[in-house]
Image (cartoon, rainbow, N blue to C red; front, side):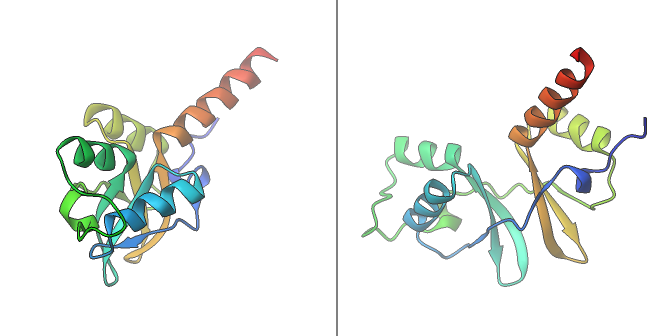
Length: 135
């Protein structure tokens, strides 16, 4: 069995948000779409990821995340970005994510966001592999 690439299991057509958008907008978008991570861009460059965890930490730290606040995504997002090419081996991606406690990989093709691969995607894939092995 050939080792799949991250492209074969990534979530395509990912949503993203501008760094200067209101943090409340990120929270609303993530809630409406039932997602836990949003790539953050400054123009055409992807510079960060905002997650449910970032929003929870910000609230705990006392940041005002109300719609009327002036808290921006860039104020509370994680500036650490793990980006990979679509043809990157899934083994390499999973190993890096595990070793570096990374929840999401941005899959980039020619400096454009092609997809995202998250811990949830990895769990779905693992469950499918286990199911196939049992039947």
